[in-house]
Image (cartoon, rainbow, N blue to C red):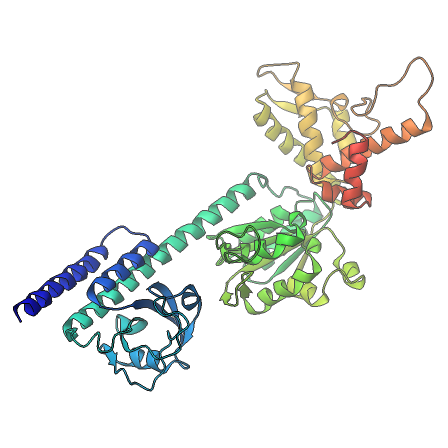
Length: 522
């Protein structure tokens, strides 16, 4: 009797120490997984059990967060309380529940105990505590033992205290996980924005009638939450228009995330947009949010949306229609609040007619279409743009003031600019460098026609030097020189994007790469 009493006191002290450990952990700096692990360790010290499980309530389902003594299969399942009467009883009871060994209610963990894997006989002893947060049921703590009556000697106050502390631990960990998720989300946003900002510096410049109409359209649609489809040739500044729309919207305080659909390999396009769970495919070592989740609350800019793979288009349509996405490998839908702005240089109506783009997706994206005029349609803006780009070039190369000669200004204004504003910037940047290089220091420099690599500008910048003596090059050599020059120009106009250059040249991307290697351009 003395030994039994001493054993009981020792068990009580161990239980109190374990409860105190749980209470101390509530104020400690622990990651969620570590916190759950320490809680289950304390439960093992308090309860004489063969298995225990901490579950969080999500709708009508209990989801395992941490466990002891259960198989991996048990931890991967979700337990709908409508199909598991014992769990329903636990959630409905304000006090800890001890089920009799002969209870007719099936135990949800039958066959999943590591100590007795596959056994379908009822577990002999079972108890459970519902977990609350501010009066709301948020989960459950269960314990199972093979020995009948294993929990009979447990004092009700100990069980009630364990349930209360476990509920507090669940709440604390959930708050920490929410903060970690927010921090991770902000970090992902910051990384995406850093990548976007590196190539997005610029302003919408111009006083022509075409530009005034464009700015009026932007002002009309910016304050709404409508989807916008921006169309226009390559290099006209579609991203700048998207950014101006975002900055004028109610979402301006949140991020605008940029996705270049033309640069998305079809094999990972769905994961990039919607995310994936760990193990969804080879290389998916951890769970990852997609661009829709990262831009939740803000704006998602889908650049070159006409390049989106056809099999992915129905999923994008669903996200636009219902605000719901589903990570690759997951059966759970997530709601997002995202404004979508799309851009393309393709004729999507022709793409629809040829079966490469869905008509219903087009109409969802083009709720408010905006067309950005080509540079040749607003030539009067070219001198203003040229002055802006020369000032940018001056700051980048560290030279003195740069200005255009009158002859250069006239030629720039007369040129058709197939690469639009982007090509104009590239030509002026190269011209500024050529003009300023022989004049180190801060003296003023005139950028003349001879510094600009425009057709018939009086200066051959590309291709082999003209032959003064000897036989003229063969027709094949001339053709190759022309092909080399045109490919190089197309790639430059698209800022090194070979896929876009291939589309301009009417070639398949792999064929362009093959030709470029043969011409020693790569």
